[in-house]
Image (cartoon, rainbow, N blue to C red; front, side):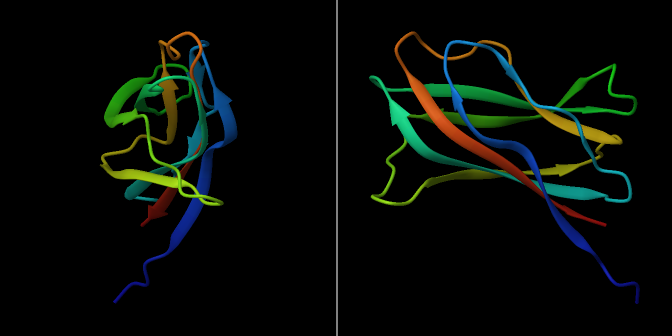
Length: 122
């Protein structure tokens, strides 16, 4: 039986998300057939911060298409000294690259500090 390999890649290093739209750089998924995206929130500010993300895929890093939507992060409860782990999104049928995209930013006066990782498997 072939040995399955896994690799964790950072889609978005710890970043404060505010009003500005956000798009991460493309991360190569070549050689992998599936992935699991996880999002952690380590800080928040403002009243009821919420954000939506899409996971996009591309074969050439020019033409991007929505592969999956991440369920909304809505005013997460962050444990003292820890982080909130948002539900994961499972991916299949990935192109050669994936990235996260948030076209709208967040409501004025709110922010979330997030990190997004993907665990890839072949």
